[in-house]
Amino acid sequence: MKLVVVLMLSALPLFCYAASGCASMEDMIVNTLNPSVTEDQYIEGLEEFIPADTSKQLLVEFRQCFLDQSNRTLSNVQVMMDAIYNSRQCASY
Image 1 (cartoon, rainbow, N blue to C red):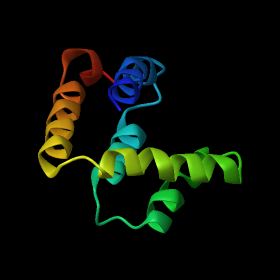
Image 2: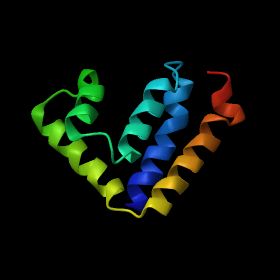
Image 3: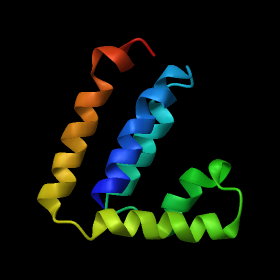
Image 4: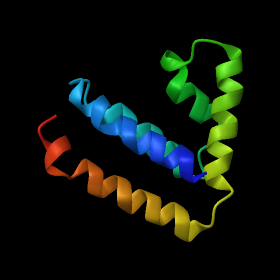
């Protein structure tokens, strides 16, 4: 789980640097961490980025890794992501 978070966070600056903006990534993270978002809503929100049905299943499993964590951990991940989005490096994008 920690490796997944590290890889996701290491890719975030590159995502912002590519000038594609952080809004899509932020929406994906919010939906990943929100247990009230259904599986269908989660996949629907990412539909344009999913190349195959196998990827859909992997995304569902990826999300489940987060949802298996305690609410405190999910809250801390959201705080961390907010700090990244409000950082000087992401602010200009």
